[in-house]
Image (cartoon, rainbow, N blue to C red; front, side, top):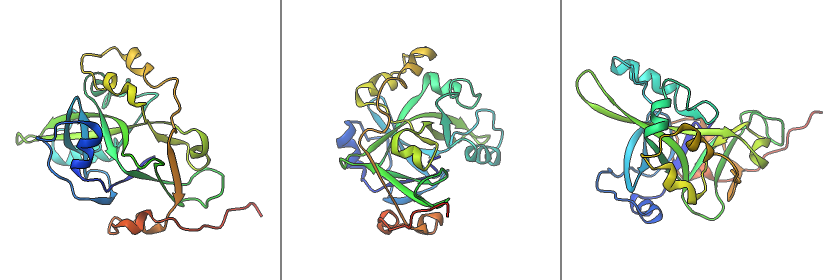
Length: 234
């Protein structure tokens, strides 16, 4: 679920939308095809920074181990994030929001699309998305600190469930302050933030070309709608 992200908005746009301090953040270039281990903006309490996509396992003993662990931890399931060794500490103490202008999914369920048809998902009101995430800091053997982040996912609902079983966790805006509150560390209370709201509110989607399948491709043509022939059983 959610293996590529698009971020066309500039840092100033994110600062304006989320009301955060950007003094610590480096400016990322517009990118329509962000892949795991690349940099993502991470919003903590009133601050925005940059972290590498994919949580580095805390017990990694080398840079190669750290990189390998990231590929297995770009997403954290909401049902088990509080239990998994890689994620559970960050879930209690260092939650975040990950802004994006959209993300890609590949059709895997029965429906109108062929298997592996890329789909682009964004907000229908033009606003920047905010994935619920967790982040952590790993110190390499050479003493270099590396920030990493994982995006929390949940069971897909509504029309999104017609082409994939999972979707990112989009918390209602009124729950952001609690989600980012580092003093809130009770697991049950945190998990309750995942309940009783419409997970797919304000989302829209359309099929896009296979260009996104290659990391060499990057540009607005990746999110342009394409016409597809519906799959049938006959």
